[in-house]
Length: 260
Image (cartoon, rainbow, N blue to C red; front, side):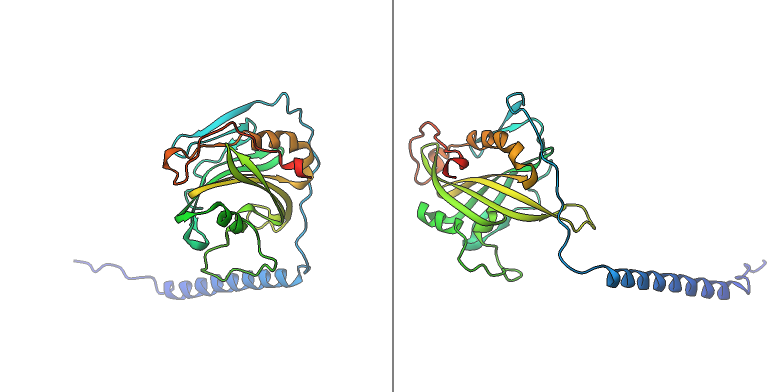
């Protein structure tokens, strides 16, 4: 039987040469990246500005969204698409052990905005005054240490928060506005977008709900009538499962702009 032929005498040398070439190419690529980063101008990230939008909201179609389990209803503009799978990886535990769960999100490119609905569950019943206190940011805001549950007030997005009392389904509620910088959600894009957030928040014992509308600040004026309609359509009826259940009444949610 003839022995199997071994590798050609030049094969080990060729492999060594090829390995060195690949290593040199990788090293050159690394040097190029480092040089590019060092030569990049330092300073704040550029702000992503947009032109305003002009929409006739009397002609826009609104469609209802309902969560039978949470007894939540809201009307959204049809131009806002449902974000599939939203909330699957975003739920988390906040301060005081409060569990946050994103129920749904709707996204639009024009106007550039997002509508989100979230629910909260506390380990023990909290008074309305306690819930309100959690919604109010402290005078001096400090960074949250890594691994520490996030503050509840940060759920409303941005900074420069303004809060005022309102009513939702006969229950005490809060209207909250905020403005903040949002990084463009594209990998490698470091531009900052200025956004405006408007929220409605209510709570009952262990449970709480939040509806937030976020719009690019440059397009807020054109989006405002439609977003007000979204906020005014919000309904939440905790029902008999709420520890401090009250009789449902007609919704009298004040417009966030009525206090301006």
